[in-house]
Length: 596
Image (cartoon, rainbow, N blue to C red; front, side):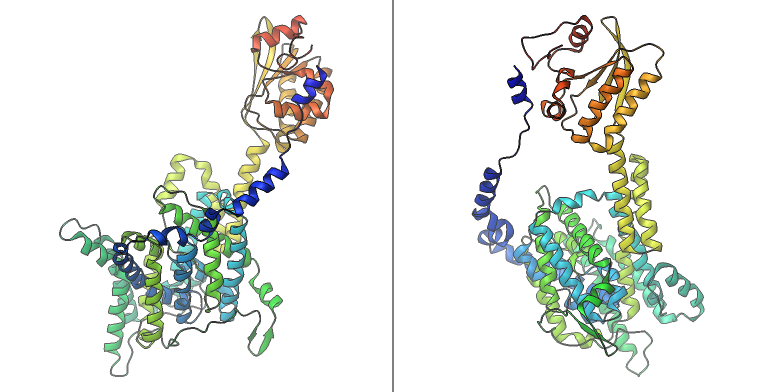
């Protein structure tokens, strides 16, 4: 009988050899290769009729990408061509490694803002971060750690996105009216705007405001019901390109007499970037800066940039998956490779772009091959159109950035959180306030910290219901634990039971702990169960653990075999209580009722 109990409560350890064998067999399967290189899945099934649709989608995305890339290069504090350098390699690389046909890889406003603080020192910093961030993301993806993004809640992501959008938009408010600002931070940008308001350039302000209104109105054109709806859709999708073309043409025409009414982008280095290793050292103002010094300058961004990049691409992939399961780890592999390859062509960090992905989806892209057209269009712009880009007004680029940021300020989500669960506003506020007034890197960490506080609090304070019941004429305390127990909640359960008994006027001789929902416990919980039994004995009260999971009961029984008799299985509560008080022991099965 004792041997049967020993077998029952023996700890079930995993079979290491079988796990290694299964892992080895998975590595040798063809599906493993195709999962890591998704192009091997869709390319053999590619149809010629997809080609036109992919071309149209890629071309349309390219018209959106080029002006945005130039604008985000400026946001990053780099020369405009660096935005274009960042806009083509990711398109080509994602074709091989990407698993979502709609995703478009390029630099984004958030990525540009996050590299601004050290990219202004030297462009080499931005390129190095691109390589290092890509390496970190790739390693995390290969280790199948995509599950980590689940620990960051939507309120935290919403707070980060909104604060970044407000900061980026505020940084461009000066460019919109022809002013220069010494800082891109939220408060200094607005302080500079109001203090220099009398000095604004009228023509820049006029063009900027008109361009912004045009962009916002054009976004609604796709909703027109009459006429050719396809025409309205593509006209709406081309709004950024049309704005840049109009602004550039106007600046060129008005500057023919030698006077330039607008502040223009200026010279952009022509030609393709060189293909070379990313810089692991640099020179700033004639002084050599080692790799270690560069890492020291980059600081916390080396962790926050990969994190934000992963969040953006996984969120975008899920938004456009259309019922398909998104492999977050594979998206991380793809993003890592895009950044690593991009660093060889002077790219700053890139990730999935929601705006361009939405354009890609609306254009009816069929496969990731559409990215090749987008990348080729960017390369053509670098090779042949850089002289034209000289005349792009800065106010036009500012209007494009502000229009894009307005769509990211989703105020309705705040009301949704208020209506659904007001407590979720805590991590939202804990994210958005530090992001706005401290830094994006530390703001996202504050949000994650707020999330962890919730998780730890829930773990340390599980839902435990205790009530006094009269069963078969005996007063008992019935403890119902509604979730699993771990080391954080072990002491809480013990304290709550003892406190309940001390506050009862009637004498209770039996405590029954229901364990139907306790699927696992650890050593700390087991020690506290044994300690609880001893504490209750001093109060002349017994304890029974009723209908516990055998694996959970086994942790306690292996620790102290003498307490095996407190575990009762299968019988009803009335039978267990009756057996305890009547001193009846079911000796036919140690598994069901146990020895009394």
